[in-house]
Image 1: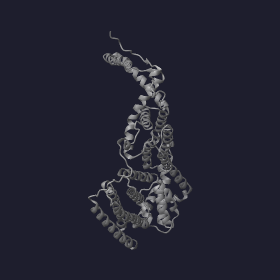
Image 2: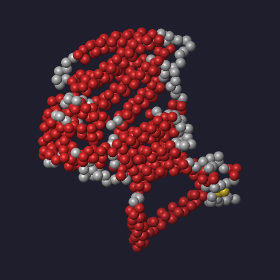
Image 3: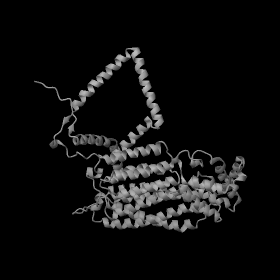
Image 4: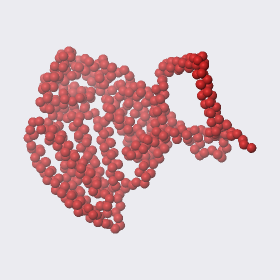
Length: 537
């Protein structure tokens, strides 16, 4: 005789409990929700530079606490230190690039704390899996809680409750809508409930948008703290990046002669060109208006040559060539070419500093120096790869790291402050040419903090031009809304150190701004300064 299935929770015997019982990741869940709350308070309801700094610092600590039971890599501590530096940078002055780097580094921190190496391809996979990992965490948590209480939830029992309730709701709604009086009554009741909930949420300051933010951020954070991904893709797919092993029976490589001839040709060409470079450029009188051709354009072409040399060396010394017993002869040629490339790198730096010596530093020149340095580091990695017979995967991984570190360093560097400290020093030392960088470029408040020293310049046009600009901050900016525009903070998260320092210096020297109180006077003085400085553009 058929019997109806049990529509109830089934008790479990001790012998049927899973080994996972009692392994609920309460620590990770708690840290995920605290991270979400921190994001809601500091970013969603704030969003200022200090808010981001507080979020990154708090999230870093919570990520460390939430992964205390994991096998950490030393890289995790390094990334934690990088996040702290980002926090300091944001407290000093806002930098969108630093915020971007912080958002990128948090998942990388979780990866390292879970024993995974943060390569870019693994990082992408880790980000995707964090969307789904929380599903498994919630499932396993539910199973553990059931087993801890000695019960087992039957899906048939759940359906036994859900199906009747669903049927009642569907048909009950249809019957209510079929009767206008009932529909009006129910509508009034639901409207009153909605109004009550809205008033309650308004009073507490917590709305549906906050709830949504908490769920999304907690979901993503939990997926990072308790990942389903347990291995790097490289390990999972069986790829290796170790030393290339030589064959027991070396085989001649068919392209050996073309490669040898190519290396000889480029070695000779590079040394001939470098002789020309260092025998002519330092002594050449550059004609007016042509500095950009020798500096920016010339440095760009030489950097391209260095990058192509890096790619060529990387492509040559791999695969079957390493099995040829004559490869050591090619390596000797490679060392000569490498030496020429390092000298070429010095030539590139020299080209950049031609322009710096001419009319000062700029943001883009700093970017150029970072770019050149990244290419040089990439070339060093190629030399290391050849010297130690490392694989191509080893090289790609480290070159991507080099690029990432360069972007990070550029983001946390107070570029405008350093640039205009240099330019101010040059101007006060009697070289007025860097003044053109003040009038022809956008400058953040860190740069204007450094430029404040020019209010005492001996050059009256430069002095009055800078005073006129700073007077604009004093008269138009002090009572504005956001501190990055010299305004009073509307929210605690808006605080930044540089605007406060600049505001203080403006107040200390307010007598200097009195001649420039009228906006027309400020504009006229600035235009005169701009015309004067343009002769060194």
